[in-house]
Image (cartoon, rainbow, N blue to C red; front, side, top):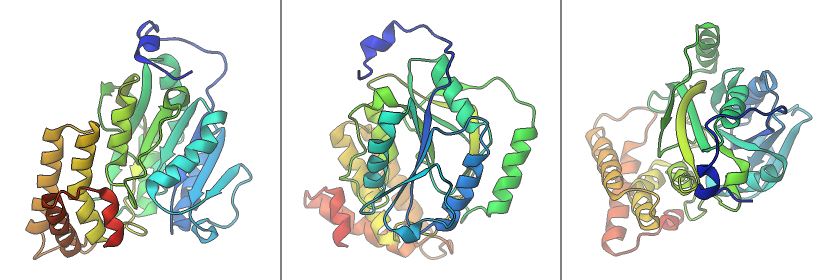
Length: 308
């Protein structure tokens, strides 16, 4: 039965269950076998073991050697939304909660337990994202050893009661959903390649079914590894076109879309002369302008990025 606002409205604020929830982990990845291997190490040390670990990849070379026995592999054409959907098809029938981790996410050892506890205690929550202790996306990446050190420091620190705040943006590097609420919903495969803003789009759909929240009940580090990311020109194109597409879908507010487009356009052009070594600002600028020309021609289709 698909979750509905009517179903959730009468639910108590907190409930207790005897059996722990089944938490399946989905990892969509290409060309990052080393990072997958590192993540699998942290999943193996979770205080609540995952009920399934599903690796959604394009080819066998995407996988590390010596995979654990509980890892399930699904293969098919690359594209973040496609890969996540293939993971969902496998995970939903065998789980109570599905968790999406980026391959370069380093979770604390109690992350899955924290996720399960949150969904058990708050039946009106349908989606959540955890506390990102550090995010290396804008820093050119965080070395794996540094990430592990920071996570271990977090694990040994004194804990405050977890905060839970509403959000319309679950962060794709670590987000979890109630399987029953997901039902037939899927990630929009019109958003190709890296699927920029696909997490916001999916959150926008889930918000119609219950609460989506950000919480400190679980935490980790997003290393922001550059390997395997979308080329600058393609990302620059998506930065302009995808927000408009999502406004038309009504999963992103027009004001947010305009802010997002302006922010990225200005940042790309401001850093064009002295770009960061890990960001292709020239490619992003070119992609921005190609997208603007297409928008003026009323060609607002995210899939046109594939022709660049």
